[in-house]
Image (cartoon, rainbow, N blue to C red; front, side, top):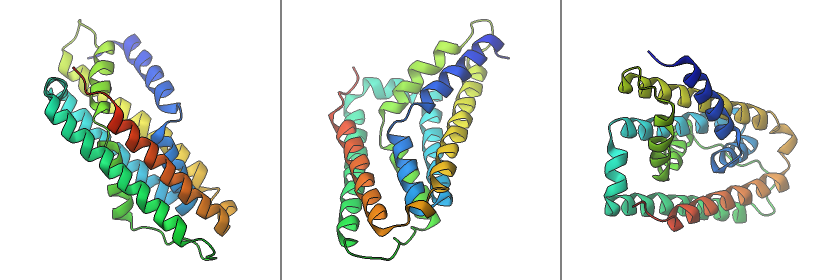
Length: 209
């Protein structure tokens, strides 16, 4: 069981938080505009899967361990930030190679896009701490805690998947309007900048504790 009033408050708060454009939305928008809505939806699926892993760890209580074990947090932060910076370099190199080209960029494979979404989601260990702090705020003491946390976690992921998919479909539908090589090349630079900023933010955030 779950407190209905708290649950609907949770859905509203989740929708507001997810709808605010952030690094994930920018990533979805750029990839969808570059490769189409299918690519954007694969990125969304990967991002949601990565968040599912993080939420599962939170439910297992590993977020508390992570907040206490500074070394583990630092390792995850360096690996995640490093991966994002590597994606940024790839995007910049690809954009530079395409200067003067007239052909559209080849679409990455489905598995590549899916994995990229997962890795970008997992690149920021701070998300686990966010879920660990956010989910319990909507738990009622009148009902068992664990079932409530599971329902809240699944609901958050569904809301995120739905809203992120709207961005993917919306920006993907504009791909035909953005097929000009100059625009596509610009999107590569924007994508690189998004990865670069995300990587720097992950690497420069203070470890908890």
